[in-house]
Image (cartoon, rainbow, N blue to C red; front, side, top):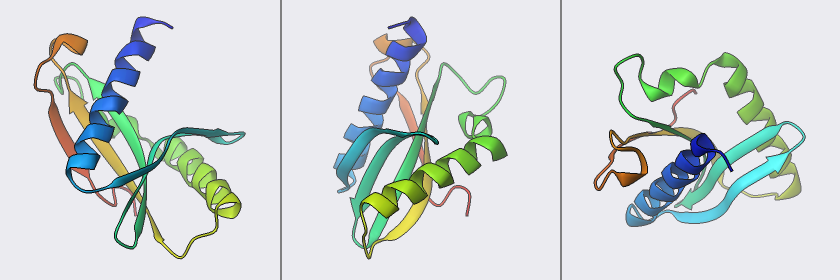
Length: 121
């Protein structure tokens, strides 16, 4: 596993921990299908959130959410649709982005976390 993959996995674990503290139930992590991958699928109340996690050292060049472009959004929607087809539910689907800013990479003690609910409705 390359360094970027390790940092990404570290960020996804931090995002899952953050969501649990916010009383979300993690339903799936790293869900993959032919259309793509969803980092985290989490439930809270009547919402099923499909969460894209973006980990960056800083927002100096661009905010992490800017890396979730139209193409990525389409892939996330297709992946979520297949998940919902395989796992029927009455929960309301939503797409969230969690930005994690870790200036010291995986050595960051308190990463800055921004949770953007309904990020591209």
